[in-house]
Image 1 (cartoon, rainbow, N blue to C red):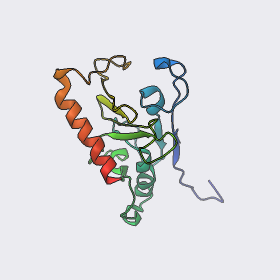
Image 2 (cartoon, one colour; image 1 turned 90 degrees about the vertical axis):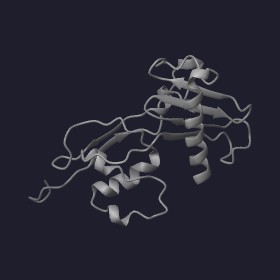
Image 3 (cartoon, helix red, strand yellow; image 1 turned 60 degrees about the horizontal axis):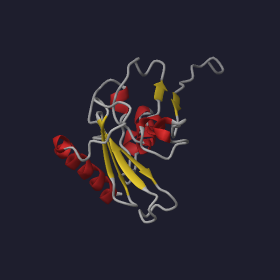
Image 4 (tube, rainbow, N blue to C red; image 1 turned 30 degrees about the vertical axis):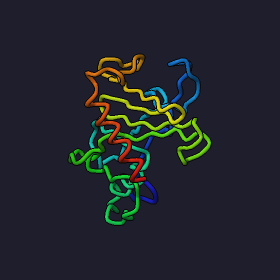
Amino acid sequence: KAAGKCVDALIIVTSDHGEMFGSQGRMFKLTFYDEAARVPFLVRYPGKLKSGNSDACINTPDIMPTLLGLAGLGDRIPAEVEGADLSPLLQGKGGKEPEAAFMQGLGHTYLWQNGYEWRAVRDKRFTYAKYLRDGKELLFDRQKDPLCRISAAADPAYRAELARLRGIMEGKMSKL
């Protein structure tokens, strides 16, 4: 309370990245593996949101329009904003979820030129990644291989998933 009036407080706990801490033989962030890429997004808005959770694949650009939506300012989100207002999901109303989260390792440039870059998409089951340097593609079925130890990109049984996720990634890159 402030001066006898109730103050609304929207509390958010999140991070821009996790850490590998030796997992996959890697240190630091800079990769698409869950240890580095899957981060918490916790929201508390007393009196406005009920307890619950969602497995939606959100992207960092979704945060700003979602917060505006929660604040009742969804109609003020500029059309050129990259992210989506996912406030209906937080409010338990359902709605359209992102198909996958888009991730990118930029190396020293954002132009997809220097060989150290990668792009990836992660949906509720799969992670697909591609390295620029050699064009290597990785596909992980996190349901069957939660530690992402064995890429299924060359497995014919995953040909359709590989093509689907490749299409999602290429579409996102084209749009951006």
